[in-house]
Length: 192
Image (tube, rainbow, N blue to C red; front, side, top):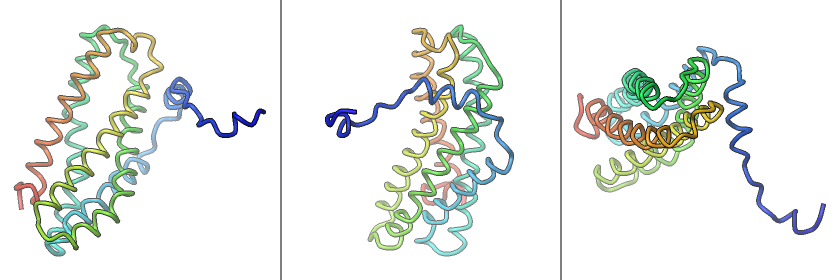
């Protein structure tokens, strides 16, 4: 091994990550429950500014938003895959969706302490809402990335129509997710 290679950053092998996800065992139900519980920690932190009841409502609404988004967006994604000519491997799709939920939950759990600090120290509720949107957006974006990486093992996933599907589905998911959390989270004007 040369000296120069010690300081070169490692390059991730997307193919091996996709193969690992596609060959992984099916997710266990407790893993999905844990992922949703992790995202509930972010909801607790998000509602900390407004008291215990708000913490409970936000803690229930954040994972519920992920569940509703998954139930509404994944069937639309499957229809889009069929129209784009991408093979539909239900096992790979199920593992990829589960992996996406788990990654999004972990990201939100990691952001929860910072969100708690911001929620109780920021002067305005609007700034807390902005940081909440940024946290939900980051968790969702990384979860969506995991979904797409999990589907890299499909041979037809590299077609131009599949790339267009990714862009379209990303925009659709972002708008749908924003609408769902806007309706569910009291901080954003939703149900209280």
